[in-house]
Length: 155
Image (cartoon, rainbow, N blue to C red):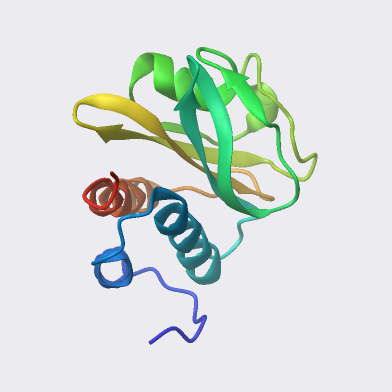
């Protein structure tokens, strides 16, 4: 089922995620497998992971990549801005983003998608890339689709 071939077919990736998470009701397990799946199939990324809301701020969750910032206040950096504005953030050059929080100096571009559960912010999916302008409109649509499938499997 998983052969680590880079994929651009986000419909297939969403179907794979749905199958992988069906029947599992543990959020940590589901977020862990979701980050591993994305990291295995996306090209030109250096960090794929989740931050979840805890005590009014974002708290590091399951991820693939180098060690990361542990807590991010709402409204700070790309992740915190995605939460405060409740919208996907696509940043072509993170060094041009005011207040960018640099966890990995190699990161050049980033996409952050808010995750909702029961109409409330659950957290964010954060993906970093070591090249500028990595994330296209197609990537945004596909990654948002991936998050919609994930939201069905959060408890």
